[in-house]
Length: 118
Image (cartoon, rainbow, N blue to C red; front, side):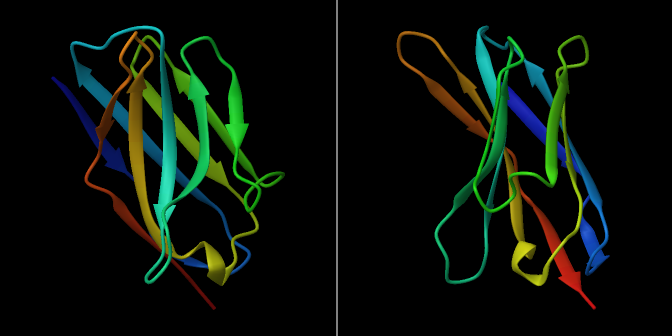
């Protein structure tokens, strides 16, 4: 089993920045991808971005250009740096780890609330 623990989040001012971390523990299959998803009230969950164990990244359109996802494979930790925050970024941000085996397996963190307010 894989456990994911998120940290960061909270209340952030409009135009400000946030940094979220997600640390995975347990028996982790490689290759894999670690990513952030978010869900605002009444909205569908959307991709923020992910980074593979090989270092490839992909970002959702709504955060592209103002977000950076990175990971430290030695620490099994992923980071999200997001700048120029808007009220539309308010959501619950959840960490995901997808093991990229023959049958992909998803693990999720509990989620962390990010509220952007002026």
